[in-house]
Amino acid sequence: MSQDKVVALRPKDQVCQDVKPIATICHNLGPVTAQKVVARALGEISQSVAALADQVKAHDLAEMRRPLRRLQRMSESLGLVTLGLIAVDLTLCIDSQDVTAFAAVWARLLRVADMALVQGHNPLGLTQG
Image (cartoon, rainbow, N blue to C red; front, side, top):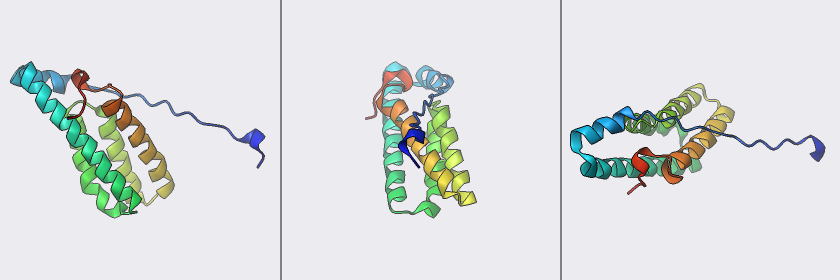
């Protein structure tokens, strides 16, 4: 295959957020406490993604279903819709034993998690803590 025919793909993922869960947390707890709760939850999501990355590196995909369900629930509780949906997609890849699809969806999860947690597309403009 010559280099003339190689196409560089530049994925452009969008982070879809539902603001209702955060609004509910703010309404129920007040802004100061809500900020602490949300920051802690974002930190837990970040740690969860890091733990999943360790499992991927160890090729321990069979044991990822439960942590992926947890990531899905945590993401949805903060309105991080895209991240939750990708966690479901990864579980489907594991269940179907499709390693090629898993690799692609895993890369997407890492990109979206980076956008949601690191680059500031997170609820209330918080960083993980």
